[in-house]
Length: 122
Image (tube, rainbow, N blue to C red):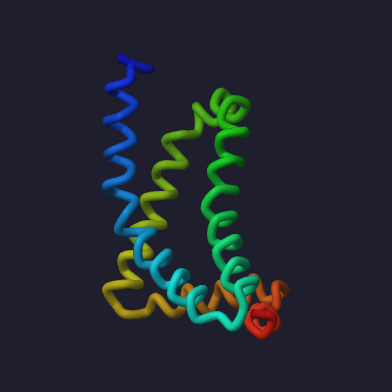
């Protein structure tokens, strides 16, 4: 039954079970970096950026779901197929040990963010 407490608990447990292996190593690494920072501000800044990176996408999705749901419904099949092809390509990159290509393209695409200066700031 949609909206029941048991259903919400079950979905939350499933989400947490699937999410933990993804978030755990990253959060652990950031906590390690934060604990070895020279100042509390630097450690706090790392944790703030991590928290924003987790929260902002969910908030934007939550705000946009209601208005976009009716517009996207006719295209869900196409969106699912494009997502499936993307996941297959990611799998091929992982199997052929070429995942670094995707990372290097990402650095080129988002080079305007000047990652090196951000790392020097910390």
